[in-house]
Amino acid sequence: MKKLFIESVGIILTAVLLGLLTNMINPAGIPIIGDWSEQPAQENAGEITVINVEQAYKIWQSKDAVFIDARTPSDFAIDHIPGAINLPRGNTSEYFTAIQTTIKPDTKLVVYCSSKDCEDSSVIANFLKNNEYTSIYLYEDGIIAWDMHNFPLEQ
Amino acid sequence: MTQKLNVSTIVYWTLRVFLGGLFIFSSMHKLFDPLGFAKIIYSYQLTPHFLINFAAIVMPFVELLCGLLLIFGVFRISTLFTIEALLIFFTILIGINIVRGIDFTCGCFSNSTEKSLFNQPIVSFAKNFVLLAIGGYLIKREQTLIKKRYHSQ
Image (tube, rainbow over all chains, first blue to last red; front, side, top):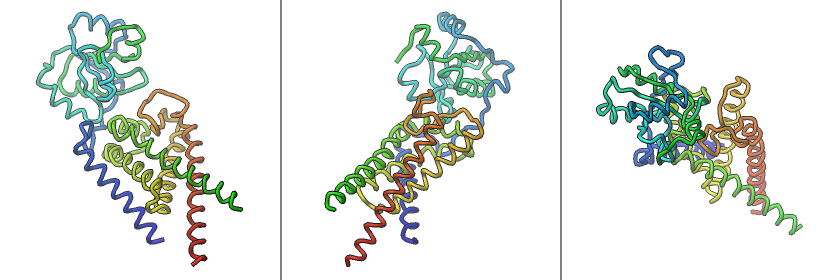
């Protein structure tokens, strides 16, 4: 029984060690402690404007805004709205540091994720609002509705 | 008698490779997309926020290691007990969320949040009982083999 316990704990500890070491060299690695505390925008809407697929497409055509893709980097790599920038939930701060200098606080931002079922876009919209961005649009139908309307996608 | 023994050996090996292979398979998408898996853990609404990423980093390796050890026959009984403990843990998590009526996907074989037959919570819940039964059978079989070896000495 003691042997069983020691071996089982050994298996778990080896896995923990392997996981942490691999995460350090994995290009898709994530911080050991993530920032999951942001709340969806609906709970704290205020200055965030919710738009539908046609409105999002019009803004995209006008090239008047920066589109923010709130999905994971692997989903973003498969396809995204042309010109969109990836700002995933989970390690938002890390990605945000990289893009913060290139996007001015008064830039019009359109945030989206997969569909109405995902709350990532509203979480990221709220995150951007809390980081002094003043013109935020939440395109809540997401990339699935965009694709269903045969609007262009980029890989 | 010999034929019966052969059938039982074939069943044993099939189930051992199946269970080990399933654990390896289910670890793959989590290994390559830890952030996607972290989102799945978050959607369960049962893990403290500071533990979500840690669990997403470590859990795939627990599954991968258990799968490999089971197939290659290293620490077989301990590995099987670890697998059973994991399955009981997952089943409790899924069960709690079914009762709470939380909208979530299993994340067992994919990080997709799209609803499909295999990531429906109730299907995952039932599947875990089948896997628990397989693990239980393998443990019993291992213990029988040990007893046989002990008596033949």
